[in-house]
Length: 260
Image 1 (tube, helix red, strand yellow):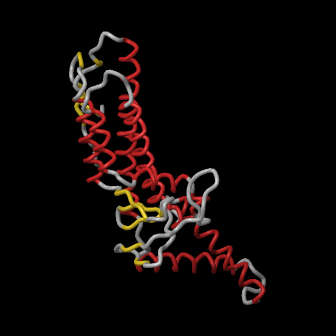
Image 2 (cartoon, helix red, strand yellow):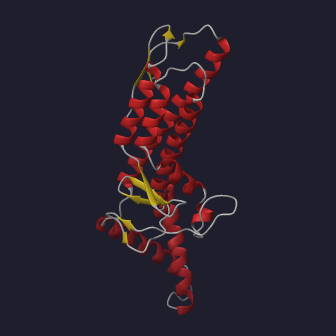
Image 3 (cartoon, one colour):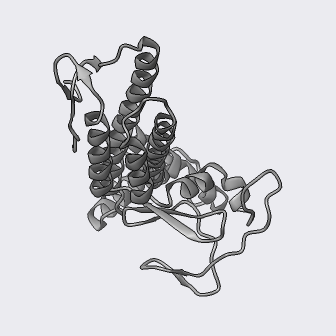
């Protein structure tokens, strides 16, 4: 478990404008919430990725032995176990009984294991995107520290393709049909792709893809974009968030986050 720590410089903002304090503090609390979501999503992603491995030969042998036992039990209940008309039904019933036993013991279907990784990668992506949106709202507030627009720009530079990759994740129904963005999307002009996973000089439509820790999608402009679901990304987010909190004037005692 990786837990990213933050020091909140005080318990509340120092200002004589109560309305301003209430509004800005609300934005900061939402940024804090998205920070935690990103941290949690990253841990769940890394855990799911470590478990998403194929079945070992030893496990396959154990599985085959158990299926044989189930099959024999089913055959023993038939008047003629060698009747070919029963073979298909025996096969499917054996499969059903075996899988239900395994699921009850806590073993996940392969489809669950496979999709867990992508689900948590997208959760990390969405948390970053929400953090982005709240930073944008904060940068437009009055009487904020002058450095905040620069910090927002730093965030956008750190995650340059975040918004476009997220937009595709939210609009797979269009991209999967080769369409771009907007109310009347135009056909995608697919651009060349060249990375460790795929090389396509003529362009390629790639959706919901993982190349190591890089979650990627073909974006609305036809280029392939990625966001790194990694400790490095989380470290960058934590650094920006800490800088953001530090630039405000606070009152009250410092707070170590997250709590226990």
